[in-house]
Figure (cartoon, one colour):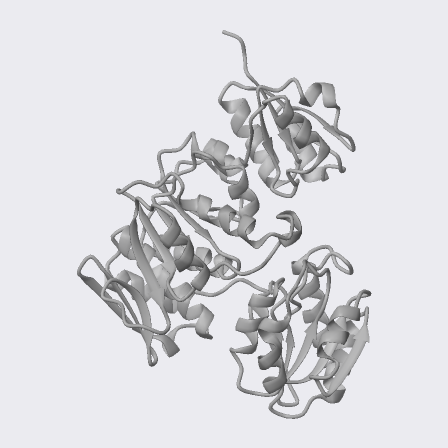
Length: 448
């Protein structure tokens, strides 16, 4: 029998995991990365005796593949991907590849915002209830790597649109779609419908045996559902309406009704705050109900949850001013939720790599709540022009310590200094974590 050749493009966490799983399953594996591969992953490739190259793509080696697994960071317009597609060579995601080799129940969470918190909370609920569950996708360890080396009964997968773009047979038992707002439009020809279509791929292979949880207050999601045939059982979430089936917030009470079973929770008791987190909590509760957790197990897990860093993370209170790190807010919709989470006057630190942002969504909230805007990016013109006549004070800098120092000068007791950038981080930082960590250090430096 001729050994099939699988090429992996990208030598990060997902690519290394895909290569390890492919080798285990009997493929001839070759990994290629146009950038240098980190020492950590290079050692794994050498140890596993997996052929690889770095710093270039050798077309003749790649175009000889029977199938290709590509990193979600590589756009479909990249020349090597265009060449592969023109030759009819399948190009798939690590998520698609790994899902072929596991019988575990897959819980997939996507959305423009909130998917990390929802994935972490769902994973926490299942793990604390004693289920044998893994966490993967856009968070944690590689899905493929875990499938190769571990044996979980459930996986909670945070799934990005980029991962869905190259998924074709991927079928989650439970799919969660939290919201769809303009994001990553530079990858979708600045056509919002292309991005919407990508998100809806999460349910393309679901059947009547599967569950689909979605935010019913989203006009985009509701209009798409009217156009599409959905085979799975549907459970809506609303912050406006009382639902006979699904989840809703009424006053300060979360209620999740699924198949005649009801769970009720006082929202202020939970460690996560803000209306967006009510949606995230309801989605996680409904998932927990889908896999059969008891109300007691759900409540215990909800109360013991701690969110990940860089998501409305309180850093410190200095001279009665609260400093909050929301570096994960890389789009306008995230900033909308962040601004809505505070009643105090806000000094907003924003800016970075603009992905085609439309700031009109937050204009009214900025007008009502933001007393000062500190723009942290070399390319400040768009933000300054848009908010120049709206915000009383604007300051531009390329240094995070300078930004925090200026916020301190302008702040008064009771204010909130909020890093919620609305933009990607790659102009001044390695990633959003690096941006958040440097912000936290700058805040700590105020006390020295």
